[in-house]
Image (tube, rainbow, N blue to C red; front, top):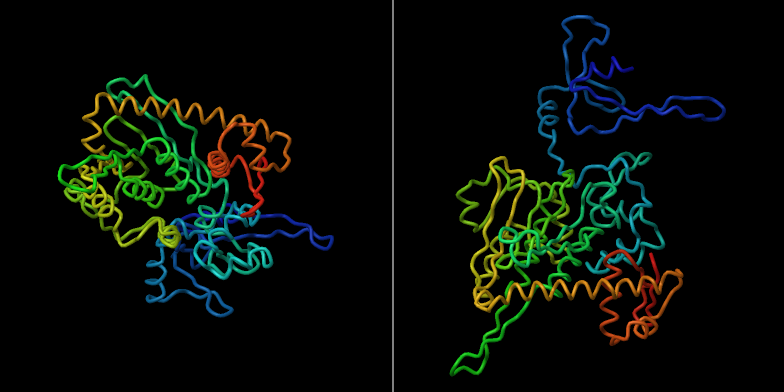
Length: 422
């Protein structure tokens, strides 16, 4: 069989599975769509020399040689399927979380939200056009795993957010740093958890009283919308076959957000340096972008960079800068801090140190909650509030964060909400 596999151009290797059916052994050959399509095969397999290769297609009940027009269509189809729309041959329907699926459908106002429990994951994914393959052998598209799997890193390596703070600068004093817990989960969960961390630890506001003016001037060290757009872009344009996470570094004077690979080669170095708008005809994860747009996390139409620059300009901040290497292997966006926050006497450093202390305190609170819930039983918010000695609203915030971090689950109720270990 191996020799026949190598006769195909490029070589193709189907999966052979021996199975016992009705007391007899049969060999099942599974021939999936290959990523290097289309494939040619020799017109005469037994010919030992001067083999002539051609494309073949299935026409009605026969396999026939493709004509020139059909060949053109086959070649045009080659490798044009975005990665997120390709079939994942490892995932099964149990890998899709009904909770995440239903939550997305509810947020986007879909009628399918009420049908998830009744009809099941497979039928709902079918309606959403997230399955590929014939009815007897259905596969889940990669985008469904990105959106609705609680552990997409099982299928896409290093799919998480790695965040590090350098209170005194990664160049000035790299030995002083704080590594935060990695953020994991589905793509929407990671985006939400990343922004929660920014909001709680790093985004600050300054109120400046302007003479002869009733309203005070409010500025932020980093405008929230600019950071959110940058984080969303990192996940949207990420190569999910890459073994590199989305990396975020907090410096005293800026935020660096890096993802892999770099900016598409169709975008010139001059355009990158200008940092106005990057227009590419090729989208690696087009369907993922559609889902993020449904959640109002992305606008599409190459509007991400203009949005970032517009939000920085409205805040009075310097423009963001974009960097990539010669081989376009990685991309880094640098979001500068507002100058008013640099004028404070070591204010940024002090804030980063406070953020580190705040995070350490939060980790202790997380630990208390998780230890209390080690019995695996459902617990009310009031019980945990009593243990922590905090206000009810603060306890709810901590519990919500632990749910996002995939440590706890809630019972899904608005009133009488309870939590337990996942």
